Image (tube, one colour):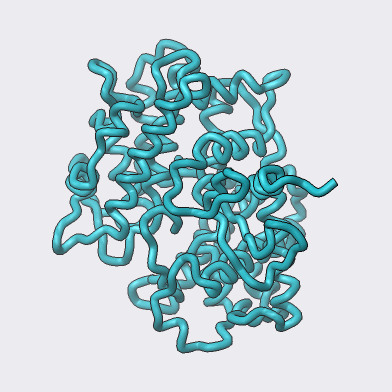
Length: 412
């Protein structure tokens, strides 16, 4: 019996679908059958060697943490979260977990690319940060200041009412945006957080089990699913995709299901209603990685971390372009800002996800480490993301990625 459109849509809300469809497009690329990119598999070993060198530079002992938002909260060598944690008398481990979820969720949703011109000056240190680190520090400062809370006397939280009242002006002021300091997709970021507030308010059974509705209520929802103190990483992503789907703007739906970060590519052919659909769930997976540690702090073990995929974003994707593993068939496209829904960008992102799996396998082989000891989350952190930034700086003075994507602040 044929699956309904709703069932087909649900099948795309998984890392398995992301991985399977990305590798299908990579196979076409290797055969030369994609419209925008050619794939030079012969350069993959050299690329993995560069990644391995980057890992050893950053983590000489190979004690690599997971790729997560918590790393960016330590920008400039100062661990802001640990300092806040030590100075806060949490009522229970779960109270800390909710606050950590509130912080991670709001910060990740504000983490779409900032653009090359934006900077954030941290008042407490006097240091200036850009890109992901700047967005992390700015969002951390917003959280600590109580900008996401509408609960009197409790600044260290995000809640439905606090999020629904956020304006682009408020976010822009907090992020020091001005004529000389533009931030890409400012309105999109603020709108995303307002929609988050609406979703949280509308699902008290998920987000308000033990508190008033707040994003951090997802901590209680996931903790209740743990069996024997263990929770699969895929369950974290599934909860994010199931419950946060409506926050994404103007995206594809199928069978009444919001598909989030899912786009079209004509080379991905199926015989059903998912024809041409390529899922990535980049911000959701970035968030899933970032929620692992708060669960662990509360004594909940997370299993199957390698079920999650690599992240289809411009540092990982830029690595493969700059390393020559991917080549534009029309080099002039590099000078043209590309829409995130364009076939070119969808193709680039899919190839990135698949190639990250291949690089991870080569890195593990070189290190003699199995996936259980060196999961993809460590390869990304050590790793491909850092290598993408490093090679961009080697090739371009401003360290910008090799392709420019027109973002609304909710994808990259």
